[in-house]
Length: 387
Image 1 (cartoon, helix red, strand yellow):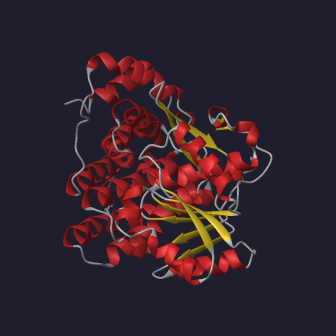
Image 2 (cartoon, one colour):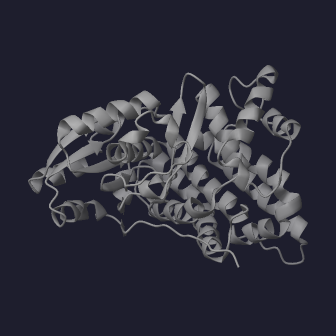
């Protein structure tokens, strides 16, 4: 019998007002000076200050690093490491989406494992010796689940590629999932990150490494996300709070609990490639490719895709597994359309397909895919999202 490993945060807080727990978590550990990693827009619009105001009230000193890029680069991380060292901080509080949290993870790892200062050597499964700097992660998007995963993604702009780092030492000790911190998400970001979360859940449910414990999380995540994403997007349009966003905050975290431990598949490997070459937002790339990759994988995971249909609320009575799988794929495609996901990738041209397919097959997410893919098959999947 195989041995299955499962890694989660030491502590996580969920619900409105959860950020109020942050000062206490720091004080209990005698941390009185923290390094805040966030992005400039969150600072500009007052989202970051919701946390830093609490730090001020508690008398906890903080230094801000807000040079996080939408797709963090090697230099981004190295600059952050230097800023951390200069600050004299003892811990990290990262506030933002996947980019801010990925940057903070890399910074925290390198500070305690300086032999990886080149950043590139962290690609794949890095043999770090020490856990990252103590980190509290506060997501402001409902999608990446970086606050509970052992993965992070860094961009190498010179090679136009993203590389995935997998390391149990990078997981934040504390995750604070507060829907109030996600209230400023615009419509497009709500849709894209929500579809990213659904992709995590679906790929995690069908990946080679899936087993009973991960299936439990992924099935529930599919259910929660598919039933609430439309409402969350409407709430973003109306600029009004509602249950959709609250449920999405939970659903994306549940998906992260699963996929972080069992891996993903070809959808994510292809999406990473699109983002590196065309700067396509990660969630949009995942969403465009999700029904296509599900169709490709159907011959080997039809039974599980039938279960996905049921999780999405589809009545599969009297259907074969293949018919129910088709219904799941159609439902995923319809959900993407309903929340405004584009169907084609701007800039994608035939002459790029060979390199894109090679990069996708070399991506760290590909080995988890349940079905082997040839170069031509990957090119054909990319071809389906050409304008």
